[in-house]
Length: 593
Ligand code: BGC
Image (tube, rainbow, N blue to C red; front, top):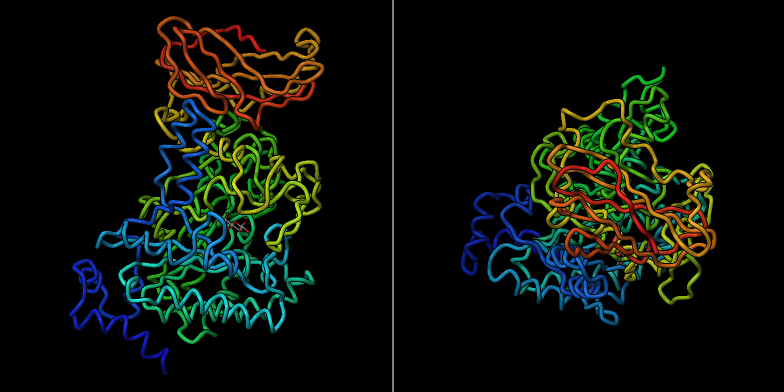
């Protein structure tokens, strides 16, 4: 009874007009029925800036200093999602404020205009059944289910439903990783145990949130590197449709799907656009890296998923969100053109911007960068039916601890977060996770510094020029050649005990400017912290510089490590990059100390 009444109340209150704000009337004019009201909530609205995340970013900027700190400040006002990652989060924990506080801030930020409040619902019984780092507080039992409903969902709904929040547009990500795990990991015993609770819990969340009247729910649909294979994709479409259709309000309660939540799968692979391209006698998608999965990126996956969901009976109005908070893959390791190799695997490895060892590596991936800034209805991707690029995972928050850390959050130690681990789940490859990581959700300064430094598109002054546009580029030159190749092979380059050596390469040259790379290599006893110095030709100036903090005096540039890349064992290399205006020197001496 109560439920039925409330759903209609959201619409009816607007129709009578008495207390409706101008913005609500605009929304209603375009939204004559309950179903149509679930359009793109991001259109014509501002988004909530989480003051807690903003504060973390500003503190991080003070710690980092220099141009990196400036770049951090430049993104401090980006909207990020607020995670309800346990029952206690509703009230608030330590310096993480509770839901009511956030909503009050949101109303103040809205100032009477439309505003989207981005929320994550994440506390299912038996959460994170195929991993350990985000195991939750509720067991996969009937009792856990009951607590999920009453102490978690009902408690959230009670707050969202208050009249003072009725003009906010609440965009809710529904339970990351849960239904995807049922598609691909159903035989894993903890997922088997969780399966009925995931389905029941997601239905319950969708229904109760829909009754609030101003909630737009997006169901988590993992990412292309997980669900893109045709079998997985069709299995997902069926699983999603069956869960939705088994709920009380069905598709009316669903605004769409969200992909890449807290993952680093690229939005686009600019140099790998045709999965069927033949290289060295095989299709690109048959390369080891893609294992026949034709969906290389999130644009592919959202377009694929949209078609599949509509074929399953979804209304055509559904839309997609993509989490672009950490899928930028900029910085010096980013390829600048397609490989010219005729060996299939080399071609793919040299062309892909995704620098992970394996697409299944999900924990604090080394080399990742911030991706597209949050964008409403991004143009150019019609087939993906995008509502927005959003930042679901607040950049800087860890995915999981790199070693065991006792805690009272139910979080386990997942070796996918341990950089020394070669994972079976990754075909024996190293995880590529950053070392020294704190528990999932905790601030991870070194990771944040890396993400900002490797942002793509870059943050701040230096848009990295698109080298693919340079007609003078030498096609025989291999720009993806690994300049960090083992330098100890060359005995003349041995930097000696306790020191480091540095060398300079031009990665790309477009005449009026160039992109340079400095490779720093640890001496025979390794280094912990390094500073390089080089002098640019006169008249040449730095545009932007990433993965090092730097200062310029005259034409001399001094660049030092940014923490996470400071420690190098003997012979180990790291690199940083920069763009400069002016002509590229053919060689340049770089000192290292
Ligand atoms: C963690 C949550 C955290 C979220 C956002 C998840 O992986 O389990 O505790 O709130 O990430 O950082």
